[in-house]
Amino acid sequence: MNISRRAAVAVIGAGLMAAVASFPAMAQTVEDIKSAGTVKIGMLVDFPPFGIMNENNQPDGYDADVAKLLAKEWGVEAQIVPVTGPNRIPYLQSNQVDLLVASLGITEERAKSVDFSEPYAGISIGVFGAEDVEVTKPEDLSGKTIGVARASTQDTAVTKIAPQDATIQRFDDDASAVQALLSGQVELIGVSNVVAAQIEEAAPGRFNQKLELSQQVQGIAVRKGSDELLEAVNAFLEKVKADGQLSAIHEKWLGTPLPNFVAEGK
Image (cartoon, rainbow, N blue to C red; front, side, top):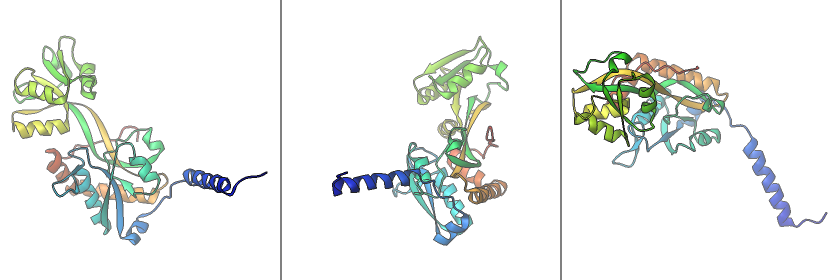
């Protein structure tokens, strides 16, 4: 069979690429990271307040503080690598980062690709309203007007539990729902704890959470099979939860103490 040298090289190159693509991501240990002196941590930088770029053009936010605290615990330098939502897991699988502190929600589907730690953060959805509005259970929403962002997680959650005589007023976004609450157009709104913190900042002491409806918990992710590394991450989280350091970071960025997040299905 006659084949040119260039074609042969192309065939060999394609084979090598296929082999590399099919090669499983390497597991690793804390000792590997300590020997390197640096832990490479993938993090979103476009998801405030969890991940942002600060005025010095450096990664900052809740996840950055957690990443730095983890590196300090292991006695290494934190090298934060900006990632995006779609490339977070591929960066980890291709060994470009050692682990992810990247606002990665714990789901069964993602757990097929990475191993998750216990929850270190999360977003809770709740009903918020003025201090003097008495709501302690879903039945108390009877006759109330509740604002939500249309087709959002909170829209679904509020619609599921609201009595038939409650009025659900749907807005184009959270900002519009918040404005309706502040102006008295609605008595209550369904929002995340992140938005709730922004309400508290805009109107200190006027509003509080009435009901918690759902949670989406986030975990630190490691490569599949990195059992020793995952054990060390969980030990770190247990320690900083117990001594209050993680709650202090949560208070700093989200304005509330760390909730007792529980991973579903774990």
